[in-house]
Length: 242
Image (cartoon, rainbow, N blue to C red; front, side):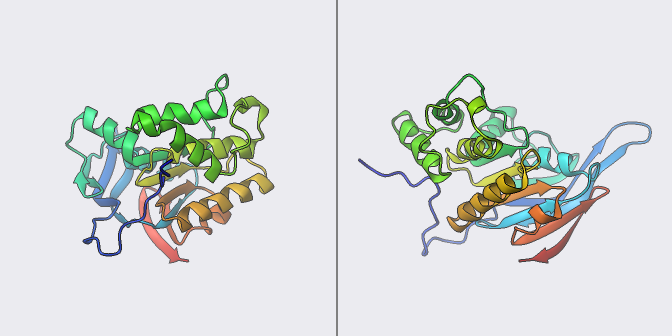
């Protein structure tokens, strides 16, 4: 049986590739009296294999930035390039295809289907991620094995611990081999032990070559990344490298 590598690394002799994520003077303004400048014109480059955290308090613009990075919203000005492809002017169908095939999402609330098994939850993600039908089962099994849940395939999410549910969510997010994993407060609903387990998993995925962007209010979570960007009042400032 052919083994499918869910996170293939680029070949050493491959030509230079564009950044996975590039924001060029991207801003988001919500109309009103006065208008709300949720994100001031910002530049950000995330190369393949980077592990970046974006840290800031509630109301700082984190959610706005997440929606822009995840192609869930369009900037008011500037350009967002995903794998070198400009996205601000493309159709909704193309944005949906990019979102399903190149971006993996992990949320604080897990968003698992409670009446479907662990394996089914991950398999369903292959339908939207463009995974060929012949590879879906193998990809799902490989992803669950990678997050150390190969022994929980037939369990329902309601029978799992919070840490296990978040691991299922991570498997679902990476099963289609996305170019970038966006994690929004991924430890927000977890205790200290389970939080550490999820962050250890992120370290493993990063070591495998996956690009991660973690959005959080927690400085402890932020410190696990190799690069850290702070957002406050809709302004991005890089604050450190690991």
